[in-house]
Image (tube, rainbow, N blue to C red; front, side, top):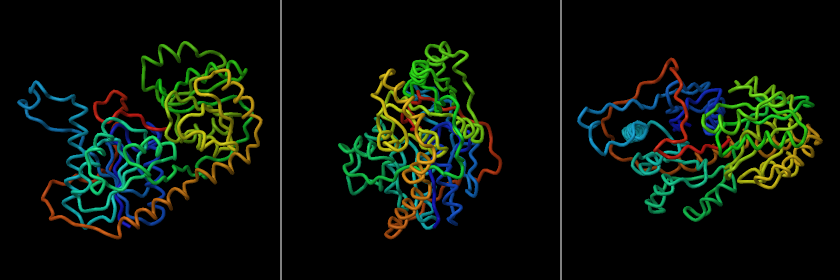
Length: 390
């Protein structure tokens, strides 16, 4: 099939990933390419997915001095994203016979609103609970005018049920071959974006209560939170390893006796937990969002949300679990093959019936040959609050 992937605009789609949405898009694109599909990804500068053609999102909006001096000029980040997705959707409308299906993985509202205009079937994955931008867009569309949707977990589907009832679920997946089984026996690992809603400071407190050392890994997104809550807690028993590349993170996870997930919000899926379990490392997690279903009884132990003492109990209990059984659980419930085949089936059904508008003449975005510098992820973007899952 000829497939378009629309990426979120805040970070390049390449390791080390800025967040779960970037990891998902990269892994799905690579899997589809390996299956022989012709895949094009519209993504930020610096993206690179094996086997996938990258077309750079045009985030460098060019405005006249008069427009920029308007008293109601929106923030620059808003205009950049709005321009990029507006231009992309017009490009797709101008080439309705070029592709079989479009799969949107951005948290931006514009592809949703313009989906019915492009003449190509579009699937939108809901990667987060409702955000104001996405919910407003969906409420503005008649049910017959909405693109096909899916949610990444039953918990995410339930969160959207008031707005779009009964959305199908395609669970996220990880490649077990990319997360080799480790021997364990070490301390604990916490991995993810270092932001308040991920609450790594609670992981530190729980590990100290359980008498376990801890390695923190991930990008520091919120510097104020880092300085106030995380950095003061570092010490001989708590080490910050930085934003690790894939191989180094896999080694840390494989060597750990337990991995922690400490969401202070309803985590849509919990990709970091799936990665840890694929390495055979059991997970101790707050029971929020998609984590209870993902971890279950066979992948780790759950604790009451926000309860540090209960999380310390879960750490000790999880560390005693059989690692082979944990890895088998991850392969069964969060394997990339099951996810990829589910998307293939959805693409095939969507491509069965198509309507094609008259082509428009627009300037096309050229393919990107060499990746450029990274753009940093910002949770304060005016466009679609960035609350990407782990």
